[in-house]
Image (tube, rainbow, N blue to C red; front, side, top):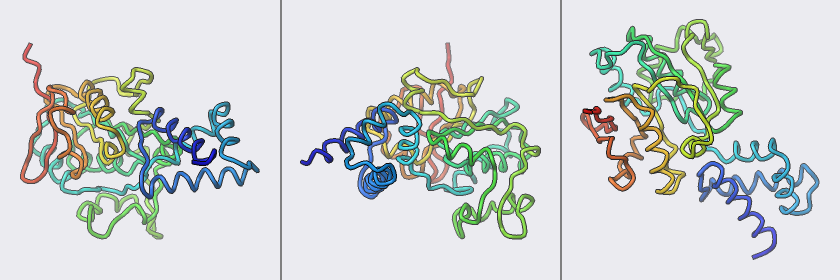
Length: 277
């Protein structure tokens, strides 16, 4: 192993230690390419110089962690879950008003806005908070402006009519914050939250939490810590949605006992057991 390879491993371990993210495959290749690009831009001859910069420049390290996040997202992704949630809204499944919703890994915000749009279409008063590790993506979420890239031709299409009032002639989407005064965003590191080193801007326990397409980048130990933290922030009988492809990997060794796995048809989710004490 060359000196730069050893340094690269040190840098990757810093990313994992900060965020819980374990890069692999093309994800790892992308991070390596970013480090090489930054070294060239800064005139560094080796990754050791970049590591030295990371240790004293918090902004540079934040930019690196931002680069390490996966930001694939779009409106009404995994629409079957939104179908289920629409049924919950229309059947008045959630007794408390407003319904409190946290999109805990929202990337550039399409998921959080989708939840607000869905509740609005059902006449359900809600408070939606979106958070993500990536500080740059949170700024994009707050801006509420999106291109056609945030839409898919099949998945989520049945809900696109909810976006029509906010679409411009060029196909871009501009969500009017005045129409959604109860939607907010903040940068949150879920691992730091689990460790008690950070708080999240949600004042009460949440009725619904979405934490999708994030756990696949964590070890089982980190998954257990983070899902326990999310469970603590759920109200009794509150619902936690993971990605359809992720939830099968959550067995009893990872899932806290207060959560029970439930299903409607082929859609699985966690529901927090009611405290009987």
